[in-house]
Length: 113
Image (cartoon, rainbow, N blue to C red; front, side, top):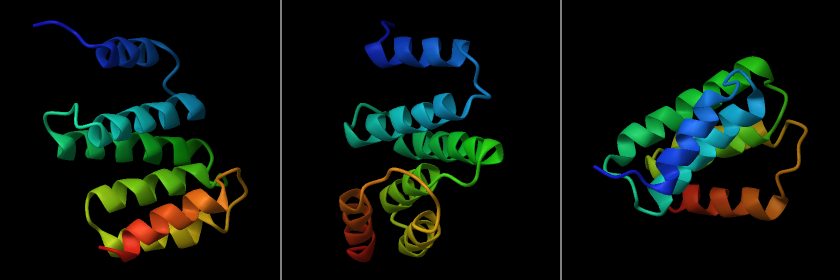
């Protein structure tokens, strides 16, 4: 069975230091992209992996808003409105560079559930 570019990227990232917060967040983003672009065979597995990567990044630093934004996006994909809105509320209390437009988009998607 052949490999895709995503497999190559995943292998390269896993080879790097996985205890590094940006690497963990990048892995979560990659999993979300796979789900959003429908390249995934099992979206539920990828969303679970994404949550695990984000949880590990929060162990490194829980004062950044981006992991909460990622968790909100994951919750929307899982159709979990309450979790998504909770992550949005929590994330907006943290320092970070997530733009209000991005928060509003994920909040709108959560409210539509």
